[in-house]
Image (tube, rainbow, N blue to C red):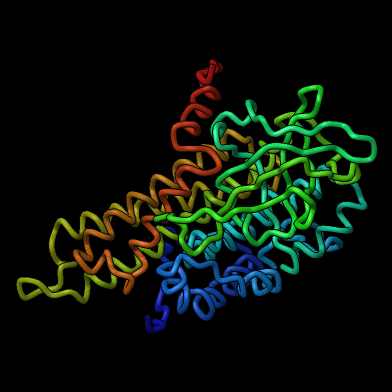
Length: 394
């Protein structure tokens, strides 16, 4: 498949750039330029082959996309949450799988090590993860426990200097190539603990998940633990209970809320350009009312989502954002992006299903993004519990 020139132009209907600092714009431009040069020309071919472009991992590290909010002394970027959001937006504009790689590394692996790890763990793991020398993954979801992680079966048992880890995790992004895994497991008291598992530990394997129609350019796998001896110094000392993994998910959901806006922007930009160029009945289809309706609704929904995630970023920077606010943004952005992808595909007609355009790839990817890190329905119930005070989960 021939590489194409990326001609994306970012929509900004409400002049949101005026709300951004010069640093924010520089960060966004750096990632946007990288995506245009290194991701867009190759990603369609990798998705068609269902192959993960491993060579981008050190590139993403060099660009600062791994752990941008982690302090500089640990190899992070020391940036604010709006910068982080803009990075995720630009990566997902290229491909959801590329953004997933960065989200997992920064929010699900580096964040818990920084927040809950020992100083020795921070020094050992964070700089290597930040640079992309090591790829990490996050083990929470199990074959029989997805939306209900508190019922997990994976467990650790005390064995002197070690704990013995048994169980399995499923749908794990980065798993097939990860050097380290932050795994959540129950101890003998029934408390959920985080443990850092390293590739090469006996009894630890990472089978690849095949046959996906979604996130085809992202590596997905299982984590299987068969009497794995994990040194006790690999246990995260700073947290017990579901608070640990859920706080990681809040950080990742924040990145997703921004990221999928990028996918929606790409679908809109593609559809708008096509509608202006495609002639039917002796005129561009952009001149027909029903196509204008689709395009007008797309830019309206994108603008609303841009405003929501920007405000959420301000609240994150001020330490005021609640997990429920992040849930609302994640669900809203995902639903918006999926709807826009479907409408954009219709504007392109039959061409919309081909790899010549990015829309069908985005559409398939977004089906995963709607599901992972809390499904559409789960996030509705989180909002519902927040506004009513009544828990509908149990």
